[in-house]
Image (cartoon, helix red, strand yellow):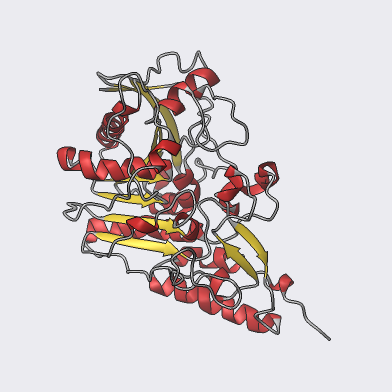
Length: 421
């Protein structure tokens, strides 16, 4: 296998949020073509710069390899979007791998506002990506492994972690079961918002790309009980029912496994969609939960687990109603239990991961944010005190990084407290 650097140019990773200033953070970005015996795909590498002129730049020796998500029909890096601040301040390297056929060669999206097929890398820039030749998703696991091995050797990192969200998480679930025991490539896995099912290891002859709808019709899969490396699974409230349907795949924590279920969070949310929320056309505001802080804490916790053997804290499971069809909720309509954030423990709105009735396919994944039926606080002072206490409790429990405390506090909404004369 070989890594061939591409000249500087537009990598085309979908993101609704402004990208961090990599140069200001002491990072470089290089796009490579990865060529293996099976085919050629693309890898984007972001790495900290070391040297006498960057004495303040930590270089951790950890490489996070993200299985780029193709549910929109094009490559996206949702876990980079959530966790970039933690990656940069820790000095981790990051590699985004175009592991799937749709991202490289084009095809139909699993979730899109319109149903038009995309062109992938080859269609977006035929000249730049002329050499890209993805052989189909049966080979995606081998391409992901080859990319991790190649970038590890290039950067001489000593810890390699795999991360992936949604459809990518379903493929990483299969990777943990079928590939990791054979290759031993990764020292740990962050599996984010996985469905209950796992992706197929192989596709039928002539089928190049996995179809998410077909995958979701499969039987629930628990992670193997003989894990040889740590696995941390982060699930949004909105992942347990509806399209993603994770609930039947719940399993207890072990010395190699942790499950964090985040109350008041959706599969996708306002943090990832940013100023482009209006393009979704949702009838109500999308979820404004604080999943971003949990994902950053998960990256830190997994790295510490691998390096120091210190397991992450266990989190309560979200509470399910007796009929099993919905969550148990408090008087405000907020889910009970789970990993708690300030917006659910000091509420001024109902943040939910469940879809709004009549929501489109895209909007169903974004949950909702709606007004409280009755105020939870009589004064702004009482609200702010409760919100700060909830923030500090989240940090103390290990579910948020201390460096993110100010950003969490900045999301308080005292303007929504109506003060009566």
